[in-house]
Amino acid sequence: MTETGTNNGGIAGDQLRAFIERIERLEEEKKVIADDIKDVYAEAKGNGFDVKILRQLIALRKKQPHEREEEESILDLYKHALGMVSGSE
Image (cartoon, rainbow, N blue to C red; front, side, top):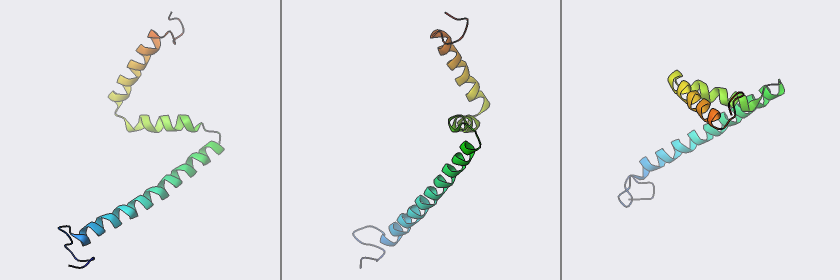
């Protein structure tokens, strides 16, 4: 078979090439989307929003309510143990 043949050394070259090209296109799209997201964060910052807090809110919104509640409960427990809550020593 030739270099572009469908079987070169036991590998389906055309199929492999197609997968590689699809992945490359998706990686490029991912980069464009990441740049767009970066621009939105910059715009939000320019309007006075705290980007770090925005990122935390987005992470929280991705979680189920029971997951958030469990994490908040554990965080509160740890904060109390470290004396980070007013009134706890």
